[in-house]
Length: 140
Image (cartoon, rainbow, N blue to C red; front, top):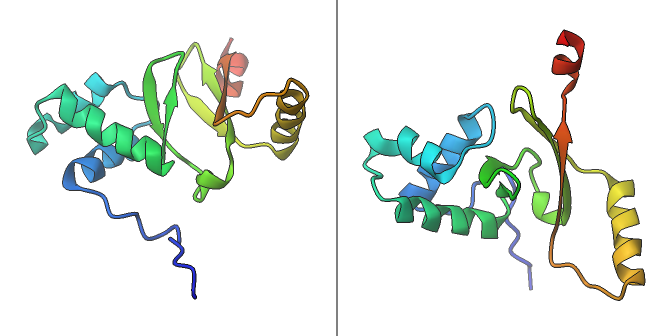
């Protein structure tokens, strides 16, 4: 039996709405809320917030979009094959709003050890760091 693997590069089969929402996030230069996405896609016939939320839910399931809880906003995943990393850290700049996605094996390992010692099995871990990005630090 040959396992059927999705290679990144082929996008999973997305509906038109999902593809539009993903496209909006992919081309955005920072996180977008559902309403930002709705604004951008107005011309494409997406009018109802529910259409955007449904699409986002599926994209989150696929692991190609991440939700930033602290901003209640969404970003396209910058690491192909991100499903592999359950642990993702986001560095969110309070000044310019840029978001850097950080996947770090030692961070993942440390969190894994901590949660295992606590007898907890996480489904997913998202670490959000708020502060200043390098560009804003240098401008300050």
